[in-house]
Image (cartoon, rainbow, N blue to C red; front, side, top):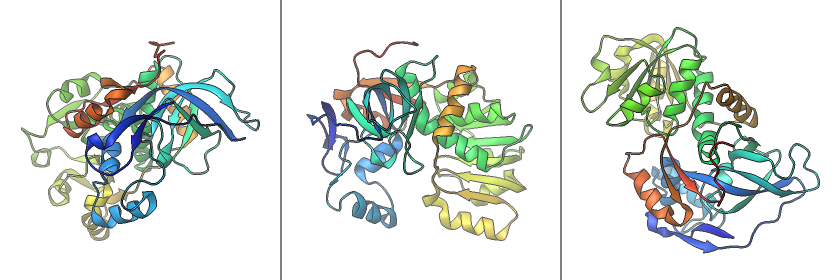
Length: 335
């Protein structure tokens, strides 16, 4: 089968299209013919190991110190069709259209993948694909949608609350805006350029172009500040967050020390952790999608053989919503 091979850490051109053996499912696994996958900022960071030293070292010990030893096919999200399965699988059947995530096992930038029906950890998992989404659309939901849902639930967001989402135009942000609106909040979305128009279209009540306006200098006060990209200044943002408000940090490593200090010296709640979605979350999101409450935003789609260009584009920071990798040959629009 065709697959992208990740043989060393570095820039996008370390990724190469190659041929590998088609996997065979174990007794508790399904074999999925992948029709669409994605490239996220997290995929780019992992490919290059662009992390602080205290994180990159354990990542190298796990993945391989000088180069990846296992998990050498990148990609985490997928949508596709079950081709065959092990004898112990009960919740799916051959031909089922599914979407999901491989988690830290990676492997979705390929024509096939085997995944367990019930994941051993909280990072993976598949579910039946939304009926009103194409494969390309559905492939974008498992990462951004589940992460956004995870953090908003941790914040116990309530109807009528005001939330500011920093970095709202990316994979997590476009779902966070819509989910916050679904939960009844008033949403202010912060980003720049063409992303602002899209954020208005998906429901943001207010948008702020961070290149022209500093939200910390406004008179507005928020119940929740959701910082997806890890670039807010606590000393400035404290002025616009209620004294008992909540910080949500989706990228906590860059803000860990300051976040702990805020937590220790004020009544503000600081939530810093890595999101861990579940299959139940996928099903919840599917129901919202099928009810017309949630949609995706796709900036560009690249074929599998253009994975290097896809990674280069994501690294520009201009990506609006999601970037899709078209893998299969029957990426049908809205089945």
